[in-house]
Image (cartoon, rainbow over all chains, first blue to last red; front, side, top):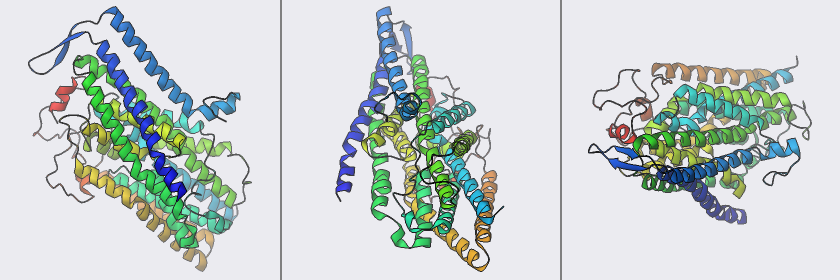
Length: 97
Length: 422
């Protein structure tokens, strides 16, 4: 019964981690796209088109955000491979071992 | 060659066949959204997923030597009866995987394997051989929780993504999110290879131990890893097109921002959940995410009849695979009693081959392949369709698109145009 309770209480961290990474990262990606979108206008047929490029500063900022996202994805790959890498190198990667 | 060795060989082959069905059953979990939105060409998507599954399988270190131990008490069985239980359990898993594939329903391969093992255990050792507390904790609760969490995360992600990019140019939006989709889907594929291939490695290990071919404390032999990695990759590359179609086109019409939100949610949940002590099925997470992305987007319809059929398939996966596993065990056991063990195993293997052939032939009548996987999903008049309703959704033939719909714009058309056709 205790096991069951602890299992159910695990739902909260799983959900929170999911929201932060699973919804947060796509949102960050969307934000980077927004920053680098420049000026756009909506055409009568509903299409949104870019009429002016984003400023250099905005593009650099967006680039930084994209870099953060790439790093998080790389961290995900490291996470998947952490035990393998630990065995290979003996280094404690992301708490493996 | 002794009969024991032949039986071991058959068990290993059956385990690899299961691994193979596991591969093509789950291709859609990672790649259905990328295929549906045109982020990747169908063949490229399954190829990428296959390579990543292969790599992922080799990354498995903590191979589940204890596979199935949470749900069945296999210590009660001696070597010979353990072999038959593992073998018929695998047959139950394979038959259910093939049937759900034929119907185009994504169901959990792990559940199918557990179900088969549970059924074979009940038949072989009695009800006390099943660890019911383990079944509840490791199988039933995660199955109830996974789709709900995934749907929630994906709904939130989808809402945020659409809010934030409402004023981004269509071209930039589509291009950006397609990249995002490919990245997140790749992560899901890699994680899948690591998680799922090791289950089969564990089953083969169990067989090797049961036949005294290997010491229980030994490491997994390299050939087992190699064979399992290639079996799952080959299955993935074959592509379960029927299931990809249901996930990518049937449940909701998906655009690239939704695709990224869904795969992002799936990747995050699959990778973090086991860390928090709750290993969730890739299939349940992926399906929940895709459903959520339909809930999170204004005007996007979730086809609840399709969702309902999936849920029904999930609920009956374990009992159905268990029945197949149990029946196969009884056949194998009693044929074994009147003749010998090897004949019993061979008869069950022949039944598996026959059933597989029947289902393959049946699938040829309405084939789904890389060429027609993205055809328009027909509106469903009868909302409470029987489970086989998905079969009717198999496209008639490539090129014979019904004329009721507006022309589907090319892949690089802006999202809203693609959506308007739905």
